[in-house]
Image (cartoon, rainbow, N blue to C red; front, top):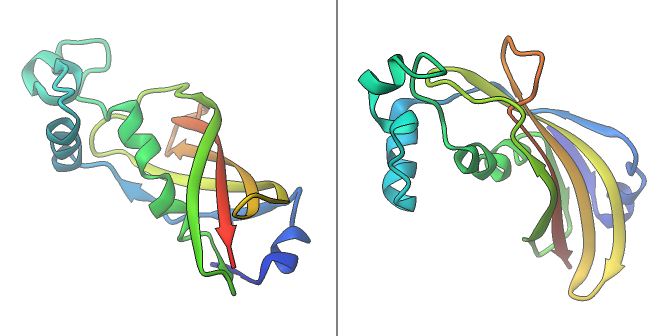
Length: 150
């Protein structure tokens, strides 16, 4: 875990890779819960028999489930002290280059692209690459936008 002692310390790290989260296993329970929460019950996610005969040979996580892991994973990579709150502001350039099979492992690599003063606090842009263990392609690549308020 990388710890930054305030915004100035964070800003000094712009252009660097901040590290990797620990590996996280994607379970069928997570996939099923996400399907319930979103109403997305497509067979490639929840129908074990049909998915076994499908293009991936098993059920796979929803792309947006993979994306939804970003906050949990990046909180394991770095922390900024001295700010009252951080909120999601948006995302740029979201892609899902490869599917995430059930019971596979993912982790997040975090690059800090920018820190700028803006409305409501300091605006940060990070590139998050969700790696899939054993795959040459990442499961997800996204630029996340956040606002850190003092």
